[in-house]
Length: 391
Image (tube, rainbow, N blue to C red; front, side):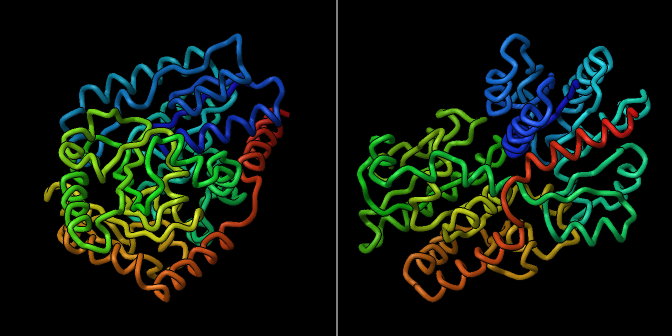
């Protein structure tokens, strides 16, 4: 069968690559065309050697915040038209949308109106904001595939049919080569000294990096100035969608204790004493890997005030949402300062009881997400849905 998949950011590329592997495994005749990133492209090249599948890399159009969406409206509209035209010309058996609701809801409507089957994988976070989008899910999506246990009750109450097969991050992490890599091999591969360090994950989008890094650099300076942390390092896990130049200005003059590493995100998290993380999939990855963390997030005053008006949840981090309580701190906007970040990281690295309570919360998070095999199970469910409908 033919599948058209759309992922618009780094987390979608990760989930999309694992889903593609599941689809190829469950459907030997699968042909996939997609908008995504390097991870999805690598899987496609492995299984679909004679027919390229990548239409457009998500890095070409990723934006964050309401103001950037407005400023990029014309480019957004052009990308949407290109995508819809390509879908219609290719005539897939199913259009599979992964998160990225601002773009994907428009695709869902187009595909539905043209008689194509629509699956939504990784539900848009309507439980956090914009609940009115539930009407769109009901109108334009044939089946919703969710990945968090707390979503089951929510969507059941809203009357949205769903499939839940666990969370694919567990497989992505547990099967990663980084989880087998020794600490010595990690430092050798990065060309760094084996010294204690704090992992820095500053987000995957340009706006996130630009907002996070000035404060992160000041935080590193404060930590480095303390005698007990003067030998520590601060290792930035460069996002796949970013380049060295995106971080360069904040590394200048700090080369002895701040370092940038690409392609080693899980390893950077795994061997760190603690992590400072921009909210998103990365914070859940840190929880599943077992790295004590503090989540830091913010943006322009305009974007933050708009978000504060529409968000309906107590937490912005998936791990805290899954538990329904604070497992790790979230320093948001005005509370995200170099000084407060330093205070929290000092506590993470010096208070053993505090760390132990956080790690117990991590255990509960992993347990609640279920076992392995989520991507393959979702792929099977999608294939069964298409087969049953075609009969």
